[in-house]
Image (cartoon, rainbow, N blue to C red; front, side, top):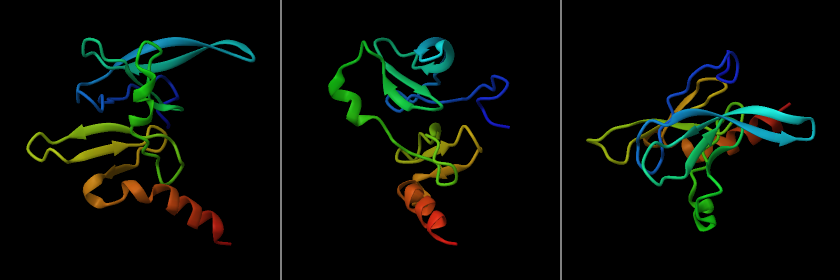
Amino acid sequence: MSATQLGKELHALCHEHHSEMKRNKSFSNGDGGATQVIVYACTAPDCHVHYNVSRGYFQSQNGSGNEWNQMPKVNCFLDGAPMYLSQIDREKRAFRLWRCPQCGTSLTNEDGLVGLGPTKIQESEAQP
């Protein structure tokens, strides 16, 4: 069951402050009218970092546009979904555990898998 079904709570961390993000509901005006979207927001003062299961990490409109390119873009190598930062290790400052909200797959930067996601998807699609 994916995180988008039945309102499953994610435990996403802000990539800047490493604090747990708070679940918020927002409304998006699409072609079919207003739709409710779950967005996670950093709880640190003056932080504009948000996470959404379909969009990944992004800055709210109150944030600086210059910081948009600095958002982490880690996609699941199985389904291509934007992953969220799930765990850090304060003793090993470089450690990052990323989790897929759709299938639950986990990747760490220590495994060397973070940069291989899109490559693995393309390889599997190319094989008969």
